[in-house]
Length: 594
Ligand SMILES: [Zn+2]
Image (cartoon, rainbow, N blue to C red; front, top):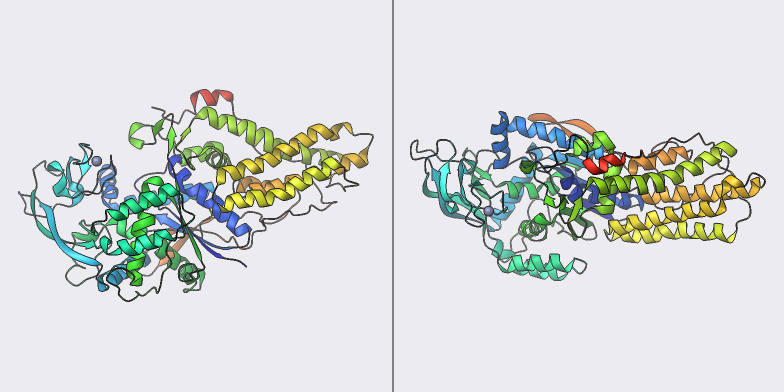
């Protein structure tokens, strides 16, 4: 029986191009998982988009001399192209500045408001003493009261990541003219998070599979819940859908609040675009449906506490009870899959320090599968991982090119040269049987690990089969069997069957190479489908690019697919290029290693 599996992927922030640290934390692991789930016959809905509100977008726009909208458009497109290039198989990758997203966010706000989970409070807002006007948060800078960072902004500190109020800053100044702002009372809405503490605790107790550290971290957070601001003095964001608020240019919903609702709004948009507007409900309202959320470790509480609280409030399930909102009873996350950080030569990736490798540069030089392989094999799955060029070159050359590429190449080359087609197998020896048995068994072992999101181990198991096949060829030496063509044919048939199996096992990790191997073995049509960039339109708004794909007609299925003797084989092309060892010492010229 197939299940509905929501694959909810963290939303990249659209204030610049993404570096390989970003995609190793959420993009590649989520895609490997989604591709595997599709291959075992589950109904996958993989959604995300660019997160485009908040002050950092406005600050970056000012820096680049663009309007906020122009900046969001620019990096939305860059990110869409990068994720398409990596082959991330989103059913929909959209953005937070769509009319649909605004509607869904406002509907969730309304449900929370009507159920009494949103409370108005006065706090201190900044005003310019010389003009008397409200100063948006982004125009206030000062020293962070938590970490002492001097360039903290009125809404958050970029150094420690804490959410701030402008009045919290030490020595606040206006970025417009350097004057010290005055603080006057202003009204804002707060989410009554403490009203969900009991429901969240009860729900967390049902999360048996979560990693203990994620559970503990989340429970500690719940024990200390405070009301959290959901509106800001800001002119770029979703308007507050209430009389007296809707038209205020300086009051918007906070970016964290709108972005996390994106998982739902993107699912609804996908359903509308797929022609069945109610289709999203199968992933959100059916308690049997599964929801997996992929993110970096700095985002855990948004997915393990805050998003579940919003869903509970919409469902009318906190301390104040209430009635369910327009979207019915929505499912809470089943699994929060967080990864650690990718560092480079020991330092955290940061654009400001010049320690950055952009996805775009990487793809242009090395193609998508080399990066996907590195991230799956050596990425920050359960501990911080360090990216080094030396390790990248070593893995590319010794594992991808020498182990996997070489197995594919020599097996198909020999069969092409000797037979021109897939040869027929005669009687099998014990060694033949042993390898074929290991190959069939790998579908269970590798699949079990993928289902548990243990990607690194799953990849290692698949590569172990590749190693066994290489050892088998070294032992059987088919190139020496000129005088025994029947035995040679059997060996090559066995080797090609294992190439086909290993290719299936590697498909979630290396979908581009998998398509080529499938074709090299005589396959026709789409083995592993790729996302496509489409331009879509909306009512009363500009067109925009999205990623979508048709993954239902691809041929990749998680099972051993018997190869057919007599299938014509062409001379194969090398699957992976070997990299110059010098690259491992210096890195490419475009990488500004600081
Ligand atoms: Zn700070």
